[in-house]
Length: 94
Image (cartoon, rainbow, N blue to C red):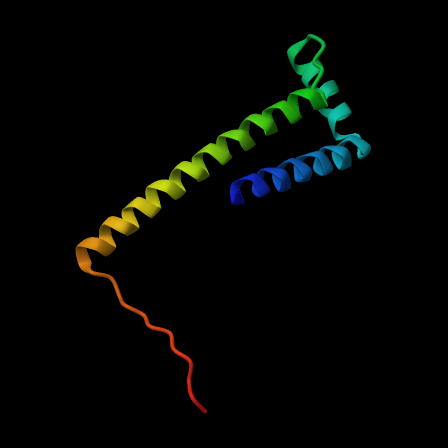
């Protein structure tokens, strides 16, 4: 669940940053520079950037979920071997 929210935040941040850089003319400058250096027309567009961000975000969701599962398993094994700490919560009578 948490990684899903992180994915949404990630995608909103990428889109906002993309829009800011587009308005500033950064991608036009990158396209012209790459076209001059490589000698062929380069079109560095939003579809590529959003697609890469989707793939990175999806991989992050999978990795965060998998790592959470592994860490929970490691904690449970460690707590069962060591014994853990018992905490008892009671109401205080004032």
